Image 1 (cartoon, helix red, strand yellow):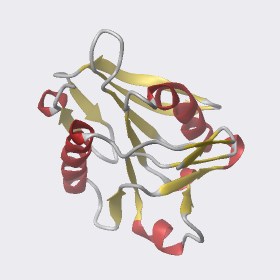
Image 2 (image 1 turned 180 degrees about the vertical axis):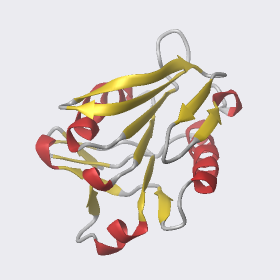
Image 3 (image 1 turned 45 degrees about the horizontal axis):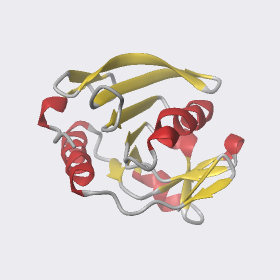
Image 4 (image 1 turned 30 degrees about the vertical axis):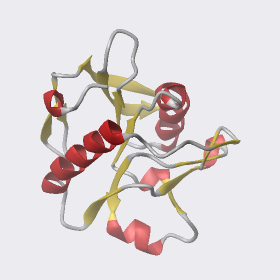
Length: 164
C-alpha cells in the first residue's frame, strides 16, 4: 500500500521479471555503495510536501537513517537513490507522480525502469532536482548502458534485464 498525492493505492505483488530486474540492480548497487549504506526493498518513504508515503522498488540510503526512523517510513530527503520499476498497473505513478515527489524532497537520483513504455522498455536516470522536476541525465532503451554518477560511479548494463 502506498499513499500517492493523498490517495491510497494498493498494488498486487510484482511479477517475476519485475523482481529479476530489482534483484540484478540490487546486486550491482551493493557492490558500489559505502559500507554504511544499504539497498532497501519495500521500505516506506515519506513525501511530506505531497501527502504521501511511497514504497519504491529499491532505495539506497545510510543504514543509520533506517535504524533511527520512527514508524514505518523514512524521510525521502535522506535517500541517495530511488529506483522504480513499472508494472502495468502503476506505470503512470512511476512516470509522473513519484518523480515529482522525490524531486521535491531533494532525492539526488531517480532511476525509472519502464517495462511498459510505449514503443518498448526504457530506462531513464533523473538527477539535479529543482522544485518538483528533475533533469534527465540519461534516457534510453533496454540494452543501453546507464552510468550512475558519484557517489555510485557505476555503469548498469540494461541488456541483462528481461523484457516482458
